[in-house]
Image 1 (cartoon, rainbow, N blue to C red):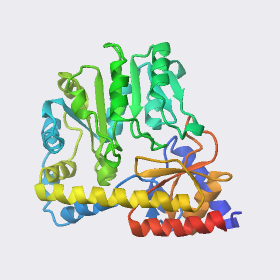
Image 2 (image 1 turned 30 degrees about the vertical axis):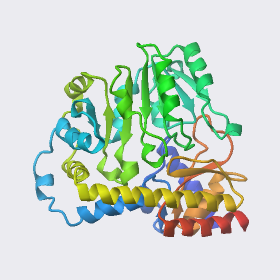
Image 3 (image 1 turned 90 degrees about the horizontal axis):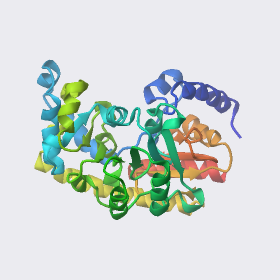
Length: 370
């Protein structure tokens, strides 16, 4: 049961959510709309807080005057830093103003096959349902993708684009590297595969970035905000077939980044920063795995995840649990009942650092167990 104040909060939140479409209202919007609510933990935004702390400690001590005062470097200069960090050829990397800009550019107007549920920005860019041929994942299989059945669906739908978010959002499920390659090799040469690996750094399996370099019909999209917690910098990149980067630079991508984002990519090339980052990634994944086990120990219905978040089934309207968590405990999560292909009562909870995870577990225990 919600208190009267919680009910009032939930009603107003639903109005704000309707204004945000398929996405959640920003923390800034919530703080402005609900000054009485203190957001202590943002478990809606999906990031590695350990890696963010490393970046922000460097950022807070940096001399950023020239990065702000002067015009930012062109796309290919930012790409050179990312290429050095990932071990990729710079002429195959296109930097995006977040992964969203890249998704919009490569998806809009295509006839596409994609699993559901998945990241809503993909189907938002398809022009009408005649362009969509979704493949619905089954909750009784923990939303895992049956790669052979998916390939059959693709052959039946005959799309010009296949989209795979791996690990998937919001389910957190992972398709193995071998199966991603098998999926790609099942396509015709005139069919393109987009693999969104925005959460691959949290997974135990390997990226297919290096594999993609040998082919002309596969694009890899990556978001740096998830792994490093820098969503405010709007920084993502795509690994493209030969020659495609130059074509994109002629159509609006030349100066789509900013000086602070460029400063961040310079850090990526620093050996000391890389060493600290590697440790932060290990520390975070260990904390995430422990968080999952604690959620399971509470008797919750939780989908196993290779990403940095978990889908948790609620016994009734997820908005009731969301409202208790946010209004009373200051924990911002994600209601999932607006996701295409996802029926039932689900919320998504991001794993944070160990201290915040303990706080979330305490609040969850009180709400679920009473």
